[in-house]
Length: 269
View 1: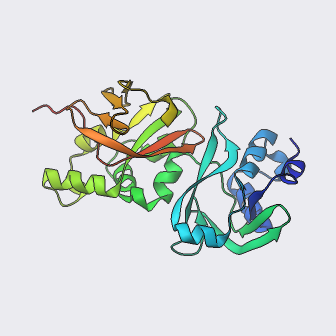
View 2: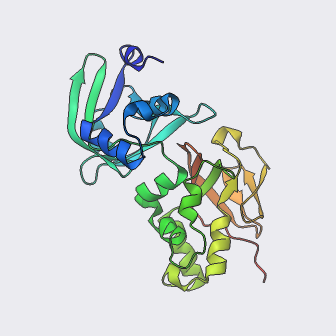
View 3: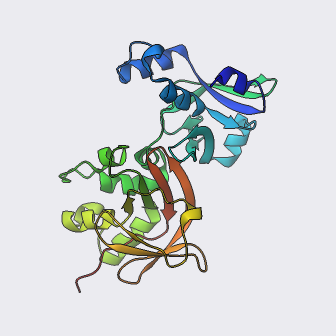
């Protein structure tokens, strides 16, 4: 569609990459020019820089960090999420920093950014959001035979993924219960089984898709059970419950929900 016409109506916040940012994007993705980027992909990437409504840098700073939604969409027309962090300037999805803020326009505000914000994958948020530092460390431990981050960055089968992402505190509780002081003390086979409990393949289950008593099979081929009472939660095969505390962090290849406890595989004891 005509994005210029679209952005001329309504009220928007536009994250505007510099010329140098676009040149870097094209080079890193093997394109000689913008004309080489498929039109539908380019349009969605551009929409990933557009937030409905006017959001100032002061608004973002007051929030500190969190998620917003852009006008880009996945295959199901769900709006993609955008992570922002203001602990050191204003940074989006961990890669794009505001260099000039609050350029006023008649129908919104423009923030100039130093990098093109590509369409996020579920791995993007694991990398960008410090809430998931321990999860990212677990996914990238040196002794893994397969690269889990690469898998979760792909839109190929078995994507899309529904990921139930444990917080740092959730992993801390797990280590404490096991009597370990670090992730390195967990045997690889157990760690991989645990990580597999948090990913449901071939599904983009948003919060509205979760129903009472619903079951889902994880990539580890184990079944978890969803309940909505008293709040959305997951019961693992051992009967342990993890509460879902943040929902619908939408990526191009799946969706992330945040949980407050690590989901465990069936115990052999």
